[in-house]
Image 1 (cartoon, rainbow, N blue to C red):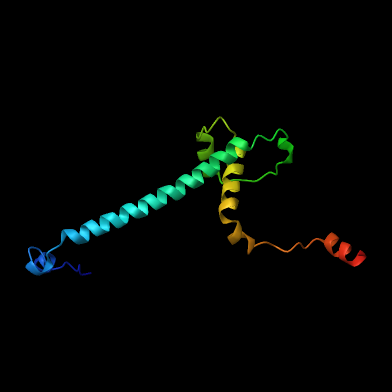
Image 2: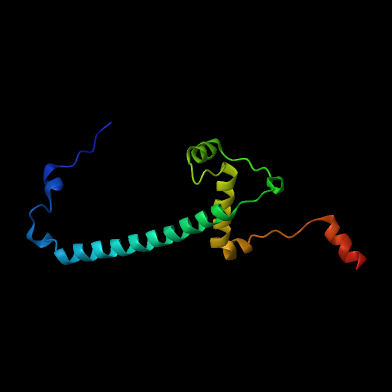
Length: 128
């Protein structure tokens, strides 16, 4: 087995080369662009976070019996259990997360909606 080790001259190529001078203008533009992306990302995240908190605070269902059972991966459940957000339960947090997701992506989710395959639907149509 041969190890392909580059020659030292190949590694040093471009160092102190007058043709490869970097300009401050390019660096400044890249930094400004990165700051804009970061601000947009933080703004979007802030909106999602505020929406999540809003759902978490308003989800004060007295009748928790209307909830369905949903199994989470263990790592997600453990991570949620480590969070203490307004002393809300894991189920409350999951509901707020899912409601925020639906609010944000409802148009995209609509295209994946399943047709109702219930036999009762066909019965109602035949009876009518």
